[in-house]
Image (cartoon, rainbow, N blue to C red; front, side, top):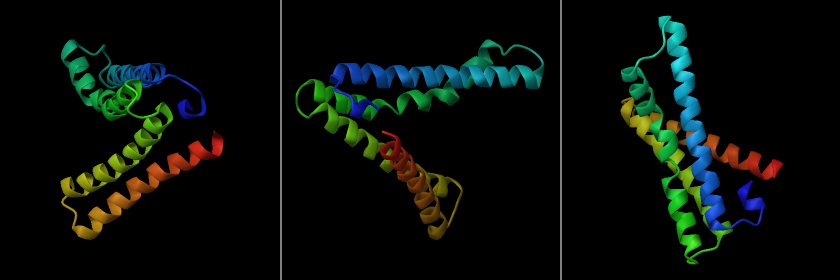
Length: 134
């Protein structure tokens, strides 16, 4: 959606970082509700730390997009270019994580390739939905 509007790199970076933090807190909260239902009591501090540690990748995934938007803010690249690169970097990251999942699952080469292809297909599907609806 950001690529469809004329926005400054700073405004885009705030939107990306803000969305990431909202998703992070939503994931931690959802985990605490699930734990409350499962255990029948409010999650303690140790549980909240564990949930936050598990959800932290949701926030950290915005690192590279923010670097790209920082470059756009410095005038090294355009904001639209930074956002486009961020999307394709995210798709590539899905492929890398698909490969890593295959490695962690002790899959053979074909299993790793299948895992990578599946994750890339999901990423490309998201890009296709973005193009279709924006």
